[in-house]
Image (cartoon, rainbow, N blue to C red; front, side):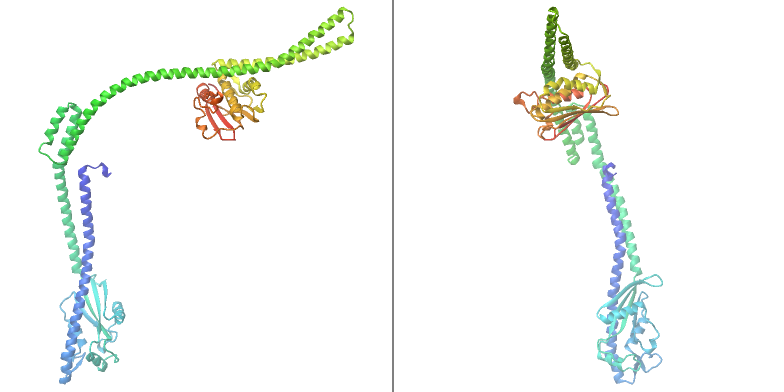
Length: 574
């Protein structure tokens, strides 16, 4: 909120808050301080008053009472006013002097738990009892209490020990017939001299002083705010407005000479922080003009360079695309070549058996024909011929069916590899065809491949891309995972339906991929068998086919000794 205020209010608010804090402090501190001072002053005055009364009584005892009693027939007692030959006791004198004291705000009282009979009916209040108990233990101290009297006035009560300070006092109290206690000793606390002061005038004076100081500070706030507003307007707001005007002109007048004239107009006869701002802005604008010209020149050169580089990059990209397309096509052709070689080798066995069976049939037929011409044909020979002929025909048909199956599987996969047209496939059957076409390449290895795909899953996609993916995965597992088929292992291909897609999983239990190689698996031309002729585009091609051709998502997980696990998400229709 403070950040949204103008500069002048950011200056005024802290000043006002500071003054208001001073007002609050003065309003709280001054009355309290004056009250404490009044209490301290009252205590000091009480101690001085008590000292004067005690000095007066000592003087009266030593220089008046003792002489009068020893030289005259006068006596000393509490009831002296009714008897002309009786003078007051020292304590009685103190009592009567306190009663005639003219100051209404200050009173002196003398009391004791051992009063003379004329005062024995007067009880002590709580303060007086506490004061007596305190001063008995610490006669050289004073006991203080600040409280309110029934009229609501603030009263400071100071109690001071009244001790027997001379032998004359001790003898008098022990020998006087009306003394309530006759075993006093020198230094005993005989009573308590209490001075009571009302300090309301001092408290009111403190409050009045606080109000006056607060009013003065408030007036000072108004004056300071007014002064800040004037100074801000004359020394800050006007120069800043002029600077803003110059800045706006800098956008309207790109001519550097015109800007310099505007700067001189607004900064003449000034040598303060605002003029420094003008000067700094002028220098900054000059540098901006120079830098802008340099930037324009550099931008033009850069644009020309970008055009040249873009052309070179386009040509390089096209060359890389052509090279990659050629590599992919080469990879496909190599795959087909391996399949042709494997299929040719696989077909040679059933064709050889079929050829042997057909030769056997031809030889048997020639023998029967010769026997028939010579009239030497026996029924047993004919029956044996028919049995052999039936067995050879069955063997011939079985091997020809096997040959047709291999050729059909290879034909479908090979056509899909070349064609890029989507078609609908039955996933489990199509994977079986791929595995059948690849079987010659792994038949003589200890690697087992299983197809656990659910029945009934149909997809519309580029079947050749899927065949290339599965072929590359199997080839990669046999070469890298099972050391070119020298180690035993198992490959499982599985697929299941989701709500709007098909999840195809491929996993083996081979060597797995090291943590160092894992981040680079899908990079172009990355291979761990470069010396053995690895191209390094097998896994890259798998990723590209999944993303670009099949519109799916691919996830690979592997660790050393745990094989690989590939998960491919495919839509129902690409």
